[in-house]
Length: 281
Image (cartoon, rainbow, N blue to C red; front, side, top):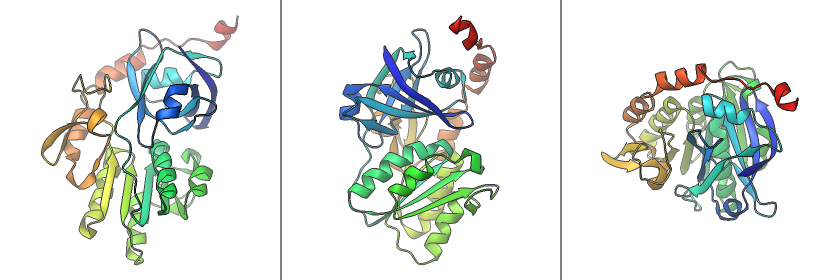
């Protein structure tokens, strides 16, 4: 069992959870993730390690309550226990001194973009971050991203905070300004990552995306996280999760991610809410 040290909401349905996991905290690198099972009879879900503190022996995850399991996880508070936390899994982000590196996070994808931005900065890059959300109240990790950035931008779809528009528009604006960009990392919804790939393609800018296919065990055994990259089958859990954006078959990725939408909805709709007052009594 793994103890939750702290749990706070950053935005609606988005919670930052710190978990005691000393061995994972010592070994994790940017880009890696953990497989979490909330209860003994629950499903496993992959969640990126947003941060860690080796001295405290804790890791931090940021969870958006979308389905049954993530909603259940977001109902947990400090002192509660989680059944299983396995990791670190996946290949670490490839970090080197590229020059000018842009780290882009869309929505809760910012939780994944953040640790890579930290690593890119430590490697000596000039780091630009673009943090996108639908509106101001859904912007997360703004302060943290600014602290590791040479330039930091916020974009909102409705213009309620920062740049009025999409992360793709801000990236295009930077390119059009004549700024030399050597590397782009984009993490967020599939349509966003696909759009980023099309923005950078004509300029031959090295672009990497972190993929989020359906994943069952996280070790390459189940084959559920198959993705097509450069017309080859890869497993996101062991070959990724990061891949060359210009080689990813985004249509295939999108189609596979829709396979169990009905079952997920049915499971979420039938989930029985456990009242915290009853638990207290």
